[in-house]
Length: 112
Image (tube, rainbow, N blue to C red):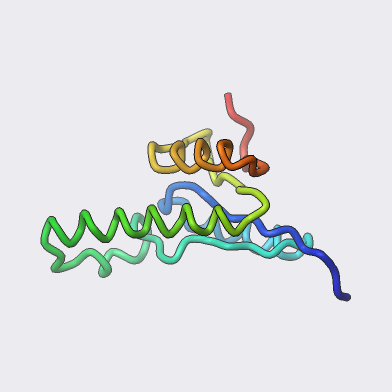
């Protein structure tokens, strides 16, 4: 089958790795192209941060945040991974960025 597929970027705290993986699989099987995070810094990829001085750590986090916004630019919309309704400050800024860019926004759990 050849078709026009929506591109969706997953957003949310990387502490929810299992929810990211489950959602990515489900959305892919529904016929979407899914863009996810590059690493799970809060759940499993801790070695990434080991040995970084504070300046390098700050620059790396800024780069990752910027890269994720570029992923949103390439997408038709975002899907927010928010178990228990949790949305942190980075995810909140990605939601605002997506809204300003006119992207569709879906949530794993409806906002309260």
